[in-house]
Length: 205
Image 1 (cartoon, helix red, strand yellow):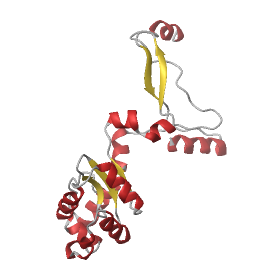
Image 2 (image 1 turned 180 degrees about the horizontal axis):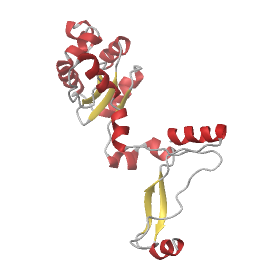
Image 3 (image 1 turned 60 degrees about the horizontal axis):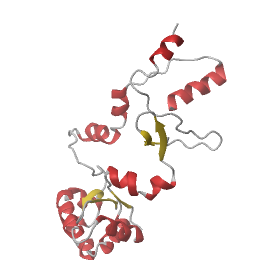
Image 4 (image 1 turned 30 degrees about the vertical axis):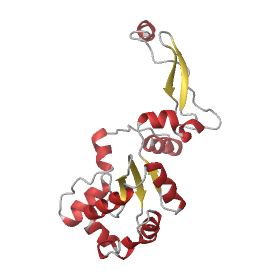
């Protein structure tokens, strides 16, 4: 999209078009900025970290009594707030976790300690407590929870309904694009096998 907009801007200024090419592999590689920089600056091959962040801790998903909560305590102020929110203020003075450098060096132990504390309650309770303390947090949900229960999904109208010629009324995902003047809408159901073959072939003549 950025490339198309840049090319369009160039056309507006010069009247000249251009070929825009995008590789899926190169796009994925461009998202590895943290890993590439780590390799070039240290010579070490980056190891898998799961959901953890390469620059700060704890900034990841942590197991709770009934699922996982994502936490973004990526500076000392948020770390202190998190410790109080989970009822473990003693962690603030623990030399292993006294600052981000120490927490990064002891990341594996930190994760074990935090998950031991978080095992005392469920994900929703921890999300409420952490957010109330000003710590960025959120639940990791399965698709049933997202599609059937998430209030944001409902409020934003991310589920539409279309009439299918075989199945009747079926739910489909709406467009995530929001436009005030020409809002997109789902008008047709997914096509049946070969439903538009004749129409397409006629149009290609």
